[in-house]
Length: 456
Ligand SMILES: [Cu+2]
Image 1 (tube, rainbow, N blue to C red):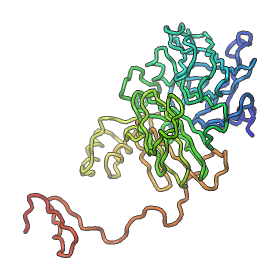
Image 2 (cartoon, helix red, strand yellow; image 1 turned 90 degrees about the vertical axis):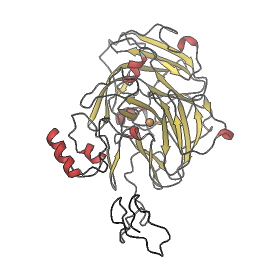
Image 3 (cartoon, helix red, strand yellow; image 1 turned 135 degrees about the vertical axis):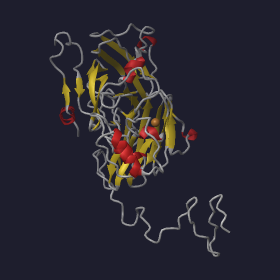
Image 4 (cartoon, rainbow, N blue to C red; image 1 turned 90 degrees about the horizontal axis):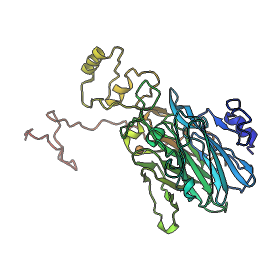
């Protein structure tokens, strides 16, 4: 079993000390933070009501302390450095060393006290998105409370009244602070651990950044034209895979804090939406889906049985959201004679090398500035995947232990079960203005003649 000590040790999580006078923090819970973007195993609750802990994609759950029957957490709003994927880091704002901040897990009925220390260069606040709470705890700066000035610590306190899926984010200079990565996940577990049990419960946020190729800091005035689409501030191939043992019941909870909607799509399985922002859906209201659209500010919890072994793609279905920092000025090169093109580009971009192909190869062969992810990237067991952004893989295996969240590697498909190249004679080509052969009399269909080509 994972103890608090081994959790900290294994996760590379550090208890900060020395930055603030100990006497000033004597009454505050210790600050726990991490500088790793690796996915941490679920935090088994060391005290309080029992629950089945969630797994945060490329993230972690914030430990707490119990004081007088109250669960006390300490969030620190601060500048952080986040690896978006190997080869690219971003200078963001977040909580406790990372963006997004740590997941907060409590149980329905828990009394919760959250200390929020502001180490940003400007004021902030925290809004507990979706929660039933006293109006003065809702976190809208100016409306419900004064803003938290740099250096100040504020205390939020309320009872977790409703089980479900929630988020937290600033409600002060929001456009800037959310564009900089300030957000986190919150799960309130049912008081009954047997309510809607699942074997794996993954959580993550959808977020987006506008970081110019070669730079580190998001542009905070961007309203819609973001160029990095991420799951929990990670872009493929930096996104951790989600894993499950064959036959397990899997829940995935997704919150959307970007400025557009995302149709989230799972391959090879049907799922049902079991939870929304407002709570659990009634069983009679559910229908099977393979894609569910998650609007801005919404959460969706989906569930399915891991019925088929394999590496199943899981991604946003907007194709430009499964790409990394892209240039909108890339021309369409489909059908363009590549030999001429290479010469023309070489005159503009020294060092350019073409290997043929269309848009993907052209872009992938461009020299990239430092700290920039290729637009279409990632390689799998069968070659280039040409993905990025909001993409990961659901890895289902028969031989996986319950509770094992480690990446099992690529799926070894049984012989004869993989799509293969047909090796007979190629079919007759038909090209406009070319010499398409006439269809034999016995053919079950007619070969359409190019218009304007009257041969018979
Ligand atoms: Cu999307």
